[in-house]
Length: 347
Image (cartoon, rainbow, N blue to C red; front, top):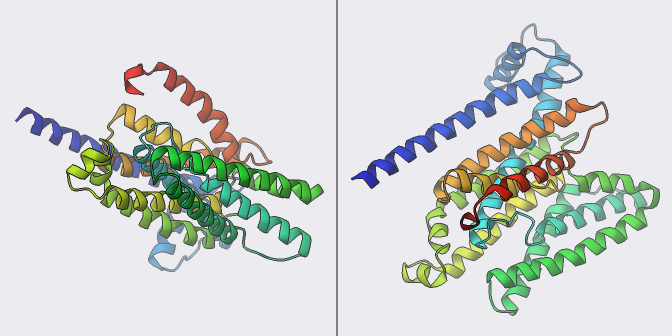
């Protein structure tokens, strides 16, 4: 009976944490769309969002305020939330799937493949005055990288943790060399490539939101739906198979799901580090390793943290700092501090 009561108590605690995160996220969103070079009050920002969402007449609201909130700031804020959500969920998935709490969305080299595709699109646009979609190229090359990694892993002993990580390292190194070659070829125009690789949400549009939002929501829902099987797989393949889990199918499902999340996020924002590593790792240490709780909470917290980080980059200086630089500068030392404080038995 005590065990049942404890589970009920924990469930209520997790639900309250989720609602608290949702409330903070909504508050942050409204504040973020009003802060910037053009200051818009909280009430006016909330009114613009409400009238736009309900389709009511905007009345005496200034046209420039509407444009700033709805067309410029809101797409960027939403991209920040969904990118942070996707990276955090992907990190939770890969950490459980690979049995390594220090894994992240970039472990399998998918992000490097996406970066290679984006830099190739930028180079072709520069050299031949084309208008190729950076996001489309990044997404396509991310999936090409995943296919190659899965093929190599399958040929070298199946989808085991070691074979997947080694294949990801190999392909990632090749793609990184390709990026370096493209940067050298770009010459004086290399700054555009470097800025994208650093990770940034500058000038995001509704088209970017429509690319990342459905992928993240669908993939995160799939990851949550099979979270119980993922929990069982953390006990080992032999135990999972004895309990009726098709380990090869579930592993492939989560590899594709996590890679979809990573590909969609990187194609929109570039490479943003540490969100997918820190968020699920801290939640696993502080709350629970149960993926039925970890996956949704990691998504909410990851989205909130990246929203806050991106808003900070807009306000720190007139020339914006790429948000990927800020997350690495702050997240790296913080993670090292937390990591060094944990007893060995928890790692």
